[in-house]
Amino acid sequence: MIGQVGTNDRVLSTAPRIRARCGNIVNRESHYAMASSRQGDLFASDPQAELFDEDRPTPVYRADPDKVRNELLQILAEARAASTLPWEPRKLSYYRTVFPQMANWLPDDEADQLRFEFAAELARLQAA
Image (cartoon, rainbow, N blue to C red; front, side, top):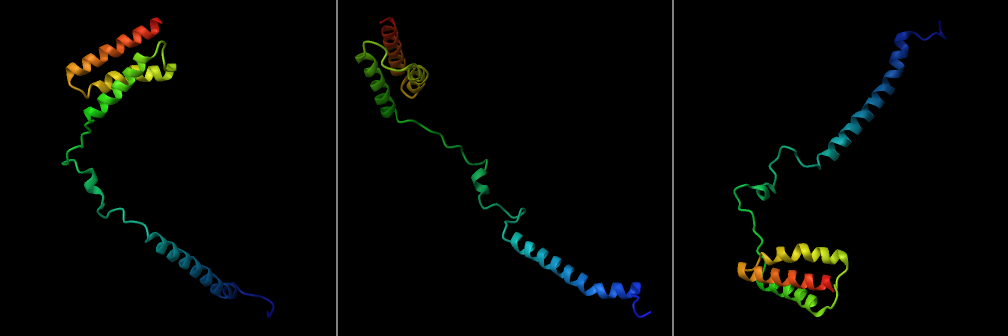
């Protein structure tokens, strides 16, 4: 029975190859473990957590009334100098929306006066 290979012989002859393959798998897994160690820990404390601290007051934006006033007066001066609507429809729609809102940054009486003058200029230009 020289040419016959028994079951035990086959298992024994493949064992080194299996061990080598398993070793490769273990090496690959350790490689991935090393790569993942560069990632942050999901359960570690977040160094930016204080950015979302609810105890901090929310910053409030306050426009500079002088800058707002100057911009509104420029828009109003452009309307006053024109004999027909000086803006394309898209910009006109923008000014109709934004002008009254920007005026909210000014004292009430001044804001009301500028809104009134802007509406009067628009009415004049649309009638032309």
